[in-house]
Image 1 (cartoon, rainbow, N blue to C red):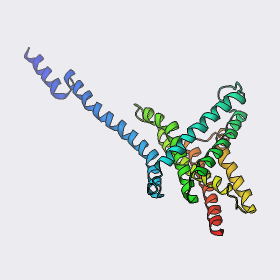
Image 2 (tube, rainbow, N blue to C red):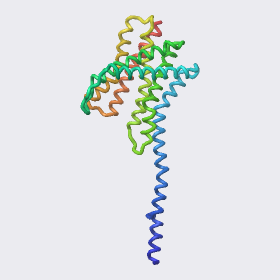
Image 3 (cartoon, one colour):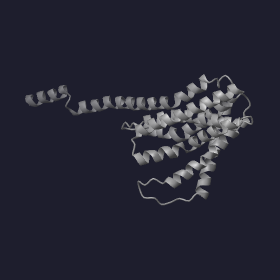
Image 4 (tube, helix red, strand yellow):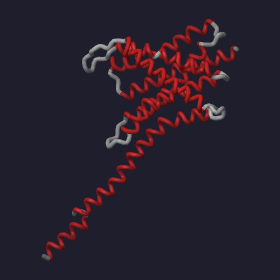
Length: 259
C-alpha cells in the first residue's frame, strides 16, 4: 500500500498523471490561440495597412474624400456584377479536363476586364479637382473594394486556421501589388481620356492599358507553361506591375510638365 501511494505521488510530481495532462492542455490552448491570432494579425496588417497609409499620405484625408472613395467602391461592385452577368450570358463555357488550363476562357475573362477601364473613367469624370486627386480617389475606392470582396473572408477564415500556410502571406503581398496596379490603371485612363493628349502619347498609353488589362491572363499563362512556384509567380507579378507603373509614371510626369 505504501509503495502504491509513493508511486502515485511520484507520477503526480513528475507530471505524468491525468491531472497534469489536463493542466498541459489548458496551458497549450491559450498559446495556440495567441499564435493563431498573431498570424492573422500579421496577414491583416500586411494587407490593409498600406491602403490606410496611402489614404493618409496622399492627402485624401485632408480633402474629406472618404465618401468619394466609398462611391468608387460601389461603382466597382456594380461593374463586377455587370461583368459576371455578361460572362454568364454571352461567353460559353467549355468542359476542360482537370489540370488543363483554359486559355480561351481566361482570355475572354480578361477581355471583359475592359469594363474596369470604363468604370474608372466614370468615377473620375464625376469628381472635380486636380488630376492626381481624381486618380487617387478612383484607385483607392476601386482597390479597397476589390480587397474587401476578394481577400477579407479568406484571410479571416484561413489565417485563423490550425495549420500555418504561406498562401495567406502571399495573398497579403498580392493585395499590395493590386493597389499599385489600380493606381497605375487609373492614371493611364486619366491620361488617355484627356482631350489635349498629344498624338505621340496615345500609342504608349494604349499599350500600357492593354498590358494592365491582360496582365493577369499573361501571368497565369506564363506560370502554367513554365510550371512556376507560387513565390516565383508573385515575384514576377510584382516586377511586371512595377515596370508598368514606372513607365506610366514617366509618361504622367512628362505629360504634366509639357502642359
